[in-house]
Image (cartoon, rainbow, N blue to C red):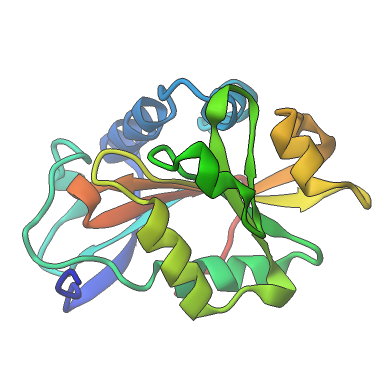
Length: 198
């Protein structure tokens, strides 16, 4: 288990650092699967809020490359932040990209095998806990790729069917996009509206 990042703070990313952070998000979304391609082509990252959790002695404006780590531990508070966001929107659910998932692993509850052997996991707010979110993050995250998208559904729809058929446009809104950063030590969050972070 990775060392926990001590003395960390949530920092809003703005100015030139924001441009670098958005470029990092777009680089993560360059992965060739349906979820990445949908989010990259249907999300306007030029608006909204971007933030990250970094060690308190790191000035976010001075970060040269968001793919570089700090060597000061990992941000292990992501499950709590995702859970908080899920609770803000009735019926919200998170879809987590499992780029290293094997097709045989896509048959479990809360997971599906999508087109082209893509494996995704999802979890709804009522069943989400910090523990099961932590397990999902640990299972799906690799140092070079992590993607979690929180959606707000428009109506009663079959999530598995929509994900399996790459019909993400059936979901009403993207509430938040979270990508891995800092060589697997942390994350960058984007949301179209203000979401209070923890």
